[in-house]
Length: 109
Image (cartoon, rainbow, N blue to C red; front, side, top):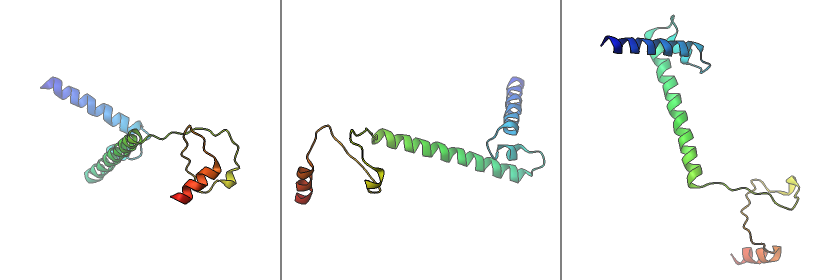
């Protein structure tokens, strides 16, 4: 029991030192000596909530990327940027098609 207590005490000491020296906003407020217990707990919940939200957003974005990856490529033709309508999305395949054939196809659709 004494060994476990000393481990917890060392861990808590390291955590307080980390919070006092980190640049993560809010960590210092959760261990500041002059703060009330309620204020410290509020800061701990706020920091923990933001960390959880960050991890959730990153995981969600990564899973979205894995399910629908984005492919980009360069065109061999130079096109002035002001001629591209906003928002511009280009879906290109390896096959070439003439402008007239594309126009006929879009009119058909």
